[in-house]
Image (cartoon, rainbow, N blue to C red):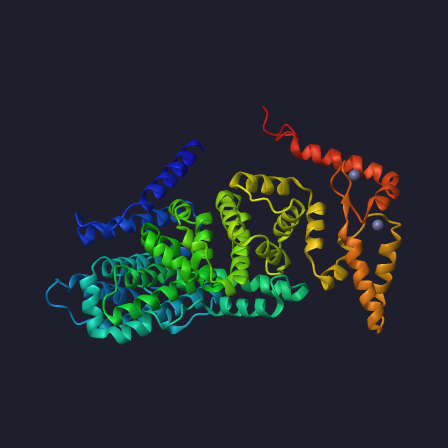
Length: 530
Ligand SMILES: [Zn+2]
Ligand SMILES: [Zn+2]
């Protein structure tokens, strides 16, 4: 056990170290820099295999790799690609690059064949052409090719001079092949939202599982992002270079922000984007083109989180300035992206840094809007923030104060959080959750009447409008029991009326809360004792 921990820590240190290596440097050859950049991928792969995480890059090909590769198979294609781009180019005479686009298409086709089998277990004759030891072998060779083109601009230019149009079609104009299940899952979620119920939920759940088995994009991810980054690096001089630079930037922002595509790329995306993190100007351009949310997300949960975290802290102010007519939707979307991240509590500081920066510039409006979103299934924090900031007269807050806000929120029992959700709901939402979030006094007369109306709405617009107004009034001055901070009431009267019936429950809730603070012993049954 000790040994395993030591290995784990050792690997984490190595990953951190490798993630900073591989910057372009005139003192190093392209080959040396490429090797350094590959260290992170190799280490990540080694960990995957070592800890038996299965899936991903450990997946094995379908043919006996002891035999010579089939001339139209995977290994043949990827080795030929490497030979043309890396070995045959000597700086002077450019080799014939014309095979590069068809080889890339071929590799893509074969990954589709392979993952269709992985996901469905249905065999097709082409499977025999998937003749690699591990997916990683193919991926890392492609990554090497991608990096070599990226770090050697004259080589990329020679390739573009020969086959620019076809290469652009394959690399920039073809959307990543996320696989049929991921496509279908995305369509389903568009139709039913993120929280479908019943049968639809189970169908979606199974589709999700299938989608996650499809790693075709993951397997080629490094290469494609390496190339996009290659187009983005350096100063574009000709009109054509400028066009490509802009297009590559837009593509990369889209791939990083689109949930379906981003999910398919996995860790490759953050790994390959390291040159962007290293270059403050480039990072700024990326953020301003709409990629800020993706960058903040990377700070939370990736192999490059260390780099992303550092880079985020040094983002220039301009990054946070959105165009004015677009700023509300953009910033509330940004908050929701951040919210996703706050679920992984390792990234709290970046989450709060983001909240702080948005609040500083845009005030309370993005928080109110984010709180109203039903895209994210836990928007209570934003409802809570919006209300606290409103209550306290919008003081300007320091990052320390933000930390306290989040701390207060997390200490709150779930029912109290719900109360903030309620106050953030619109009229339709309030009617829907009236029983759930409303007053906890069993004999609340106003609640009874509102519920009666809710169950039998009249066709009379004037009455409906009046009831709508009463619903708002009813929810406006909610109070909670101070002792247990758990039960909401529509006002002090109801709280007092419910006091005696609530007493026993109040004590119970308090006991539970204290227990939650002092957790029970870890070994209550004496299981581990001699
Ligand atoms: Zn009441
Ligand atoms: Zn109580």
